[in-house]
Length: 312
Length: 312
Picture 1 (cartoon, rainbow over the protein chains, first blue to last red):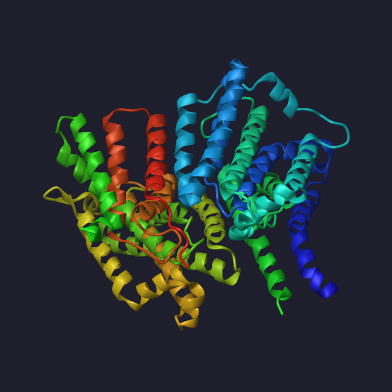
Picture 2: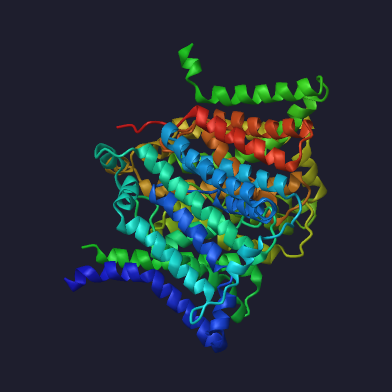
């Protein structure tokens, strides 16, 4: 019994284990970093990364892949630093419109049975183009309330840690604990069965993409709240980070197998490993992206080993 | 008649022709020939990686090489360093580029096979690491191709770029390899049904290894050619070829679900994309509008072409 349960349990624990390992590495290299202030600094950009990862997770849950989430986050960030600041109502309407476009993309992909990789690659140009049109030069200013929100100093837990907990709990409850969440995941596991049970695959795809759009917008807002001004290219790195975060957190590309809590942990691991750990190890920033790739490979290799052992 | 209309590549050539007409109508016919020459020259680079990507995508769902841009960037730097500006070292430099690409292709396959990582993530992680190697290796390098190589990459015969002629010959060879050789037919069979292909006694893993190695090698070749054509190598030289390589394969009539490939369509789609950019440049639009229009047109073309319903 335990022999059967243990590989699965180890698989589930793997994301947390990698986070602990990275934290242990940081603690060993620089004990002073493990403090309220240290975490606030090191996890500075973890909130937008975690939100982007959750956005990507919704798309992956439906067996699709969103290669446009980075430029999308950049574009919503540009809206936040311009229209949302100058004319809040118009800005909010624009952001809602962005979510509607995401839902429409889901509809297009479902109706025409299109490959999401190509559609979203095309959309990445669209978002990038819109961002450059809106903000040709870096600039703009984040609304004051957004800056205030992102620099809150809650007691006991640093804000990024608290925010990560809230994001993970919300996504976990919505996707893993509600009946429609099970249907959403089911559309990735066995779409035919879900359709025969009377659910509309079109509505499901639209819901998944709308959720991705919503979390993308939140990620853009969080990012601009931290950086206080925007740049058309500010979100570009988030596409690959978000995919890496989902996979690192135990998600699979097919079958609707995703883990919201794992995805947030994956995002935190990437945020910590990419820059603080490397800085403490005195590795030049040239290798930041490479470190992300290496972590991804190591974790997936570990997962494959565990998986292989569990087979009879 | 229907046989001709059902040829998927026809539409991409038609689109290319229409875009060209729109551009020369705008200029009242001036520069029509020059536009075609430039389009042929630029299309070469997309076609070379497009053919590699086509063989990979043909292997079936989930097979795609996301490491091409990083691969092109690294190979361009490696080949230019090896050539070291001297005409006598062109051949060694080209071999170095091919070897660099081949090594990346083999590394991709080993990640997929040995660590059982899905191809998208394997090539993505690999591209992270390659990017870092490239940034670290190419830092501060100002590398120019030898004059002989640059002249060769830019040479024309009667207004037709020499590289385009060579690439057409290569495309014919690739089409024959796809339709008439054991390798090509095996790749198609694997894409249609990997289990059936395995039971039929095909050497599935060997074919996959060859395909990823081939795609990597073509990426390396592309890197050297690009550096020659643009008279210099840089880290970002391959960036646009992620979207381009996938888009030309899909627009050209190759099925993203695998098992159905089309070589002529890649030429049509590549000319379409290049002429589209030429047209937008002729209209004198800003870079934001250009990105926006490119993205929208790609999404529209994909949506109009439509995906395939599940066979079986």
